[in-house]
Amino acid sequence: MAAASEKITLATLQERKRSGTKITMLTAYDACFAEIAEAAGIDSLLVGDSVAMTVQGLDSTLPVTMDEMVYHTRLVARVAKRALVIGDMPFLSFQVSPEEAVKNAGRFLKVGGAAAVKLEGGARVARQIAAIAAADIPVVAHIGLTPQSVHKLGGFKVQRDEERLLADARAVEEAGAGLLVLEAMPSPIAARITKELAIPTIGIGAGALCDGQVLVLHDALGLFERFRPKFVKRYAELRREALAALAQYREEVLAGKFPGPEQTYG
Image 1: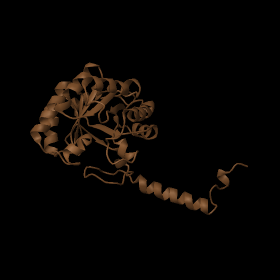
Image 2 (image 1 turned 45 degrees about the vertical axis):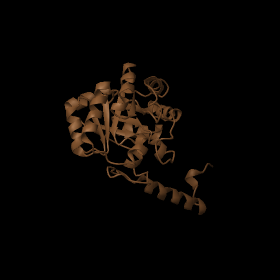
Image 3 (image 1 turned 135 degrees about the vertical axis):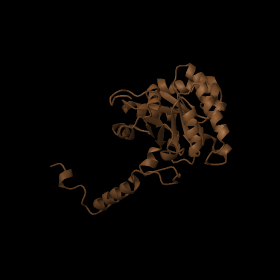
Image 4 (image 1 turned 90 degrees about the horizontal axis):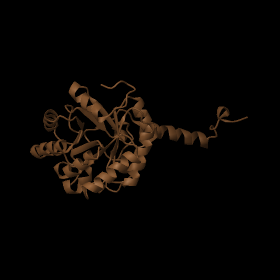
């Protein structure tokens, strides 16, 4: 297990699995929240394409671009001194060809400052994973509910095909993925995958028996209101607190109470 000041890598997280120590991961999209998450001791910061919904106000992750993802990754990597920073490869940045996948994965490291990349899909993207890993770029795979495939899946649905999920998990591990995100699947399936794979698993809506957990930051802090998946636990209600604070600010400005003497230069 890494010391508090030691930079975390995929190898660190793989050792966590062997030692039975749980892994913590959150999404982050900017320097402010990345610094807070790292100060809280979070092991890994995923610069997720969920930025499209949480920050950009879009209805899915599909429209976010490579340029936007690299930009947000750079903001997070700038302040993350210990946590593993993972850049999330957006829709059509890796599906076209292994060569295109390597080129875009490299941008996350070379320009964005990430230490690893994540891409969605199982056996169907094994060639891309193998090519990226062969370029010495650490790879995180993602199976189960894959939001970039929302139209093919017919919506944000729990994935229950155990044999397909297990085949996908084995395929990405064999291709060279060093970490695997399991999203929205029954806990017994996730537990079986976690037991049978040598690489760590990170659950989101996949039960407590994964090697670690990830949540979208805006869900965990109570900032995102449009919908709340079953697997989300809110550890704060920051939207409610921010709304009350800003309403008070407005009232004090209207009443002439702000700025007061303590906020005024003589």
